[in-house]
Image 1 (cartoon, rainbow, N blue to C red):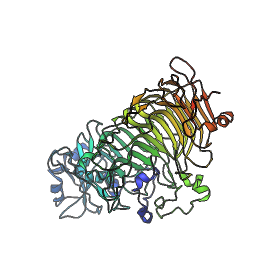
Image 2: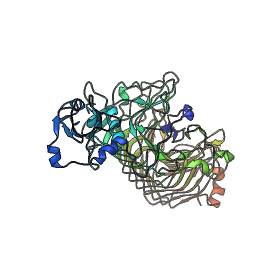
Image 3: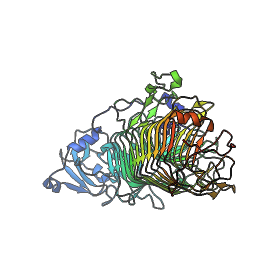
Image 4: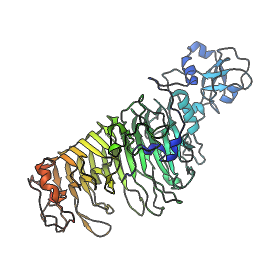
Amino acid sequence: MIGSTLEKICSGWNKQAAGNKHAPAPKWSVIVLTAAAMAVSLGGRTSDAADSDAATVKTIAQLAAQMGLAPSALVRVEGYRAPGDGGGGLFRYEPDSRLTADGGAVVKLESAPGRMIRVVDPDEDVFAEWFGAYGDGDAVMPHDDQQAINQCLSAYGRVRLLAKTYGVRGKPEVYNAAVSYHALDLGPYFRIIGSGRERTKIKLLAGTNPRGGGPGDNYFTIISNRAFHESAEHIVISDLSIDCNFDAQDKHTTIHAVAIRGGGGLVERVNFRGYGTGRSPESGSSRECFVVHQTLVFKDAGSCRRAAVYRDLDFTDCGHNGMLDGGVAEITHIALGGANNFENAGWIMPQGRDPEFDPTNGGENEKNWWPAYGGLVENCVIHDEEFEPAVQKSPLNGITYGDCIGLTVRGNRVENWEGSAVFTMSWWNRNTVIVDNLFRGVTNGIVLNMASTEGKPIQCPRHENVLIANNQITLGAHRNAPWGTCGVSLFGGEMPAVLRMSGIHVRANSISGRAYIDAKGTRVCPIGIKVQILRPTYHDIRFEDNALDLPDYADAVNVPQVPFGQSMMYFPLALWADATKAGHVLFRNNRSPAGKPLYPFLADWDFKNAPVLGKP
């Protein structure tokens, strides 16, 4: 199970960050440009006549060697290292400029005062090649391009990547260099745009193996916030592929593709490949992989608080960690949401612990919650991955979300895939719509989970006003699924009887599955709809008008020995009478393919009771 809060994903998961002194950058209502970028942009596009009068040199090095230029003189460069390599452009001489040179937008002259400033129209594309990117990541001896791409982002807040493979390696995180690494920077309003998801690739180069300062410090993200407590809001990443290249590393490091700490982000038309969950050989620690994930900077009141939009994403081909001994953590492909301070973790605030943390009621209070609003996961495809302990040891989850209000999950496809298509654990979850998805050949379709330990809830879960409708769920024959397969599951562990799940409406879904033999030789019969909540912590749970094509049933004393006898399950039997009388749970008009009404079978505490159907 996902055992850490969603915002920990981006933090480096280390309490040392409590001492972080990094101050967030000032907030602006529009993109904050560096001084270099403002100088470049204000230059505008020169007239054709002026352009034709410009002197010409072959490379940036030759540009830096210029002498005797008149103020505002124009010089055209044919390439960065060689003519035609994409790094050329038009520069204007500013003798009084003292802007920081970056070798691409601002060039310092070797033997003359001032700077050469690249002339850029504010509306035109800008390129990493201007800063020396090679784009040869698939070559035998590739160069790493993260510095060039980051310099372009720093100067202009955007970059257009060409139809190339850009190789990247890591750099230590500013807030805690001993723990986490990432390659490419995100800041407010940054845009990383490729030339097509099959044409442009960002690839982690082989042998990067970014290691931290000690056992268990094993995190790497391809694209992540440039500063931990600065909201990277309204970012855009689109039209490219990201290859985390897990199998070309030492497999000790968990590798994510994109981590966004900030609201309003858009990630669309992106292929994700080669992500994976590592395991530290020194400590045995294995940290979860969240391939693309978004959360908020807790209590950054000036930032956007909208959850991300993920559209037209494609996930497959995760990394191979079969060589690792022992268990490894999960891979969750899509995650998004807000933030919370339920655990009063020191890394939440820049200065350390939140001084306004309210410890009453176990910390489970609205003021300790920082939800993201809205959000959309649409037309994403997760496919062709298996959980096979001898090969791919990581259990798989598809879409998860937490600390959200008003998320929509629609039109997605998860198929040929050994995992839960939608899995939401112990987070706050309000006003969610999960509709019109196709989940085919999955272990679980949709799971709402409330976990506990030692009789206490983990991360203060709430699932409120969730609509699950018009989804097609076909369960696979997954030999290594430890608890079998299930279409829609509501689970609640051992915890105090406080209302935690309400207004969950599951209607007009199509769920099908067949019995199979698992890896232990046991015959497994899938369950279409399952309620397994140990205590009366729920109200207004409705299962209506669902079509259930699950004819098989187990040879068990508590299962009705009739076709479709295991289509639905309710646990525990002891709560059934009170729950139905009080309107806590309702099963109505759920039917077999032949139109026969179906009722849940009731399971007692030890699953050894005589067969009982939960009829009204």
